[in-house]
Amino acid sequence: MKLHKDLAKIVFLGLVLCLGIGTEMQANSLYSRFGIGILRPYAGASYFGQGNIGIASYSPIALQYLNPASLAFLKRTRFEGSFLYEQADVKIGSAEGKFSDSGFNTLHIGIPMTRGYALSFGLMPYSIISNNYEDIVEGSYRSELVGTGGLERAFLRLSGQIGKRFSYGAGLDVYFGRLERTWRVFYDDASYVRTEDITSTTAIGMGGHAGILLQVSEKISLGAVMTAPATLSTKRQEDYVFRTENSIIEGEMKLPFIQGYGVNYRPNEKVTVLADFEAGNWGSLDKDDILGAETTNTTRYGIGLEYAPSRKLYASLLKKMSYRIGFNAGNLPYLLDGKKIDEKFFTAGLTLPYNAFNSQLEIGMEYGKRGSQSEIGSEETVFRFVFGIASGEKWFNRPKGRK
Image 1: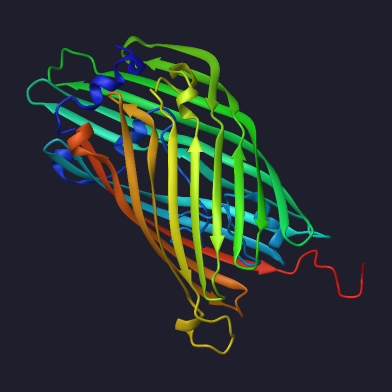
Image 2: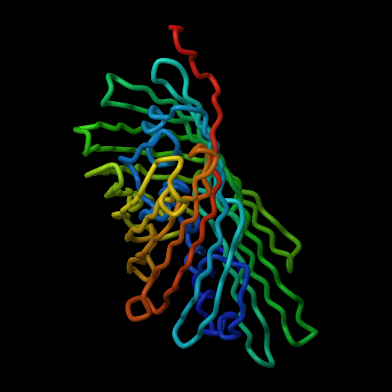
């Protein structure tokens, strides 16, 4: 039996699927079995605790991933790297279990150039597949369904300014990755041969994105971003171990047009309020465009607050730290039995500056729910923790007196 035809039937066979055991497994989400997996929206280590948003945000010392126009405000070369830990408490009917996953999250380097121009490059996850299920039928067989991989996104960006209040930016994206799903069946009767179906898809392609930032006043800024549709070349290999045969099929995978808008409000030097709205045209994709998943359009909105008591070097550590809270909500780009999979998260975070505010340790947390027992028969309570390190160097700075 081929994996790609029977995936949906196997996942919910027997509600124990390893969840009934109650042990923690190296996995991410039961919903990552759909399409290209769980999408990874990420604003940056400094903004994760502030609702994980920031289309209209900008800073001379903090990099953000959503709007390339924000690069124009950098004053010196900035480096940022982050680590992510994620845990999901899963419920499917009466069965419960726990997933967890951790590892490298992002890398971003921004370099200010001359006359208001800046460039940056980096690497971040676009989606992740990480699920692991087991179904045991006593006296008959044990089956396993495992999903791994995802898409990565490498980017190169350039930004500039027109006057002092308007900035723009554009970037080139390279999407690449390997998405693998494996189905194994082990029979209790030794006369039956173990079966194993492996579907592995490698994908690579290019896309682009752009953004603008407008400082309406000293207190209010507006931002807008768009990500262009992309077509990725794919090579799908299907191996059927029990029949010692395989096939290789070349094809395409598509990513949709995504647009977003944001507001940045700073009533004073200590407080910053952000609000974002984003919409993705995922519903325009056919099943063949996205590894057999049934898709729907996505929306995502959020709000976040930052409080920074002091920027003075001689202030106490508690006053030099920045404190953040936020909220975001939206839906996955997939349908489960024709119904949307919603998610909502509360966030919190803080920044610990050192080296005269030139470097920061960033801590961000996100807690919320994905799915609904009453509406789609399953749900996850999700906790994410991000730890980031950011620093800066004086590269390409123009000495005073030179033009």
